[in-house]
Image (cartoon, rainbow, N blue to C red):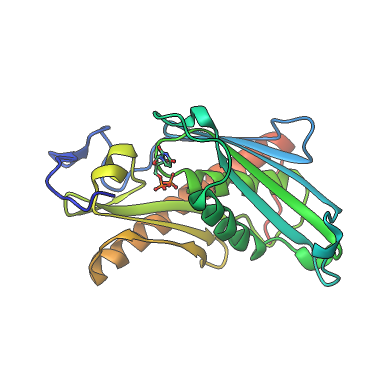
Length: 243
Ligand code: UDP
């Protein structure tokens, strides 16, 4: 997020990759792609490629983390060393720890943790290829993987970002837009209630722009939500149970 508006990112109403301001990159989701995990999902979002795996509910280790009132949910967001242009140093860093924490908190809002006291649900997301928007892609995939694991949830969580480039509010920033744009606002919502379970902001927006960005991000999220449900229907057939 360079905070500059003079790098041309929109020409004749179209963005550098040909999208309109309110258009998402292509999103493709597949549920149940790994045999060893209890649940899994693979997601492509533009050039982002992420793989999510879920284990549990299972025994809590280390035991002192155990909670007699509910399951403990852990989330590990990890970028593969080969996921970015300059090799990413393996292992956690401040950014991945932050993304893991806020993503776990978002999922805790929908997973019925109280049904599984003294257990642990572990979510792992590996970013195989990154091109901006990976925290949203990761959380969206994780939510499908949790459903694939058969873990009871109030609803799926779906994430999407909006932001500002060349003084225009746009949906779902790509890499150059993220680098040279003016603001990026990733959000995650619970579609049925409209509850916002994650929100961050990088850069500056006026109050009006913020409202526009939020509106766009919610609309984008709802489009991705349909794709999450389609992925689960393709895997399990029929109608996904909507409470
Ligand atoms: N990125 C990178 N190296 C890093 C972290 C990020 O090259 O160590 C790139 C990657 O393409 C990522 C983008 O910068 O998708 C934007 O990162 P940001 O922290 O805004 O998170 P994201 O938009 O992926 O959720």
